[in-house]
Image (cartoon, rainbow, N blue to C red; front, side, top):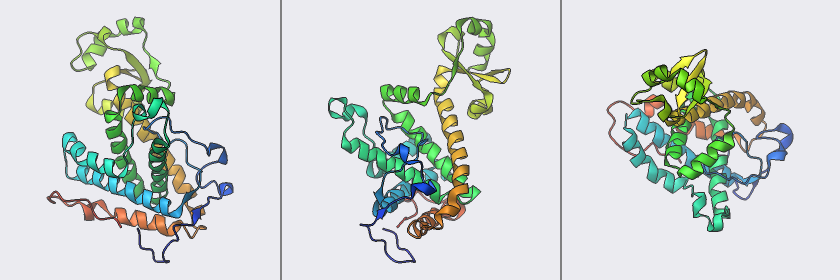
Length: 293
């Protein structure tokens, strides 16, 4: 547990949130069933948790994000990062699949796992919204975490999660695909025929990764994205939403100064993340991430 300058926290006390201040969200969102283990974190939590849970869940997530950031700064390959992060996630945030539930019913164990993931994300939002640097690092680390989980998720559950997002991707008709066949094939590496792929149209700014790689056809402000690049579209949307949410969270931080139970914890969490330059230096050997207590 963390050491605090204001003294130890009584773990039996409840972190009862004042909904009138809307520190997390309106009470109408109180009941959450967590039908998917993937999460875009669009709906903030409102149920009561203990201060011990508030603190420990955040520390556990911070350990995961610190390891992800360490892999990034050490230029580990995706395969090396996966090998390093998988056991860390299993230890602190093991998210079981729906198929593991008896009779297909979401068990209390699954809900508990997903609740911890949900709450810890929002707690760290509060801790890392104070400065632009912290917001940037948090968004980057959370995006990498989401990408890792998305790629490892069961295909059926992943498809169900995507459908729940209501992303409003516009499908390209067969007529338009035939009309633009030459341009689509030319802009898509490894593709021989446009009809071999399903295509979506999205605003070009939603797929910056594809734009940077020059692997997407653009016309009239729309990017024509093949099904195979679905991951890039999902990741870009996740990042954009989180960046916007972090900006909004930063504006609500002054309200938390009124709560002397939470502010010391949040300050400790943000300080434990440290500065990237001081924690990960060039040429540093492969060691465990910075200790977080």
